[in-house]
Image (cartoon, rainbow, N blue to C red; front, top):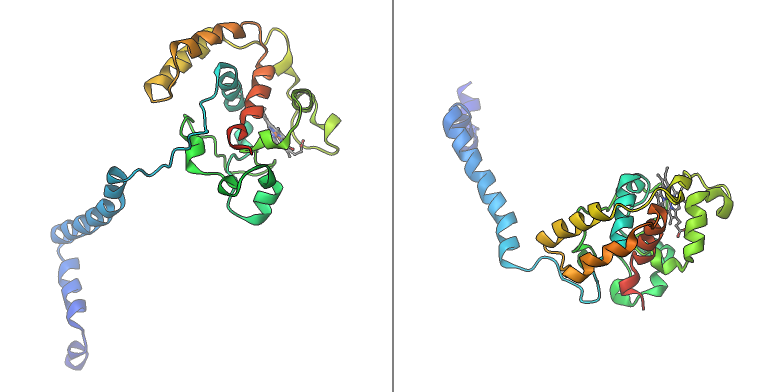
Length: 221
Ligand code: HEC
């Protein structure tokens, strides 16, 4: 027993003492976690963590209305909007349509997004740079109405109801959303918001198509 005691290192003794004292141990643990947290958090206050990209513009009223549909229909359950910096992804998601700088998704592409729609499940293809797929509005519409009709064997659900002429954009709701987004920093002018009035009678599907055609468009070569 005494032989064993001699072999115990000083720091093991110290830890035995501290672990025996609940309050002291809690204080030390708190200090250790606080130091780690400060090291993580403080740089965020002192540096500009997101490099804004001049070319990236906020969604206009119609595109934003489409974004609301994208959220309401849960498209993000199957589609991500984040191209990772891997060659097989940049090749697949239209890297050739972008300069070297914008091959994959950058933080600055999302500065106007509230909430982010990164998604996590990649059942369908990534849509961050869907504009570079160069599909026509008609293709996008046909695809949403009946994916199997344009993509053989597609397992994507059909959304024909979005193009029902009675299923239109709620203009008042949209304007309220735009005002809310302005409060959190999206630079919408009064004219941008007033432009929402022109969307009376536009179907949710058409707004969704406008949104899909905006994804990654600003950064295309
Ligand atoms: C159950 C999973 C699922 C859901 C939900 C889903 N998709 Fe898809 N989507 C897919 C799959 C799988 C494909 C690939 C086959 C195809 O192109 O139809 C796809 C393809 C696409 C494409 C074609 C991309 C390209 O360039 O080839 C677009 C655009 C798209 N989806 C948009 C949407 C939108 C908008 C919604 C919501 C209204 C949605 N998807 C909901 C699974 C899904």
